[in-house]
Amino acid sequence: MVLLKNRGDVLPLGRRNRSIAVIGPDADNTSAQGGGSATVSTPTRSVSPLDGITDRAGSAEVTYSPGTDGISEGDLLPGAAPVPSSVLTPVDGNGQGLSGE
Image (cartoon, rainbow, N blue to C red; front, top):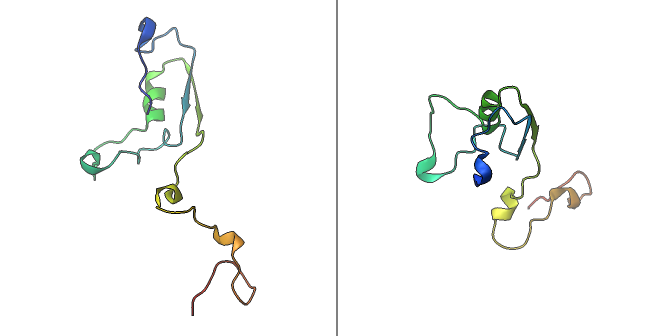
């Protein structure tokens, strides 16, 4: 989520806006709620950022693009980057991945 500086009193968005771009991988879902005490296990109502903006946009055209997600699960692991299983081959040469004995 990006907070905007209200330079020139452009916020809140009004009727003079003809188009709004919503960009981000989590803008179209309600699952990105943060963590710890910010998490609500069973919310009574959920609205994604994209739906909230679309509902309030009036006649403005709302365009959504997921953009790119700069963080993956592998980025959170300590140490070197993980090797993808697609480049590993078992001893017998069949399939992908490794097997232990």
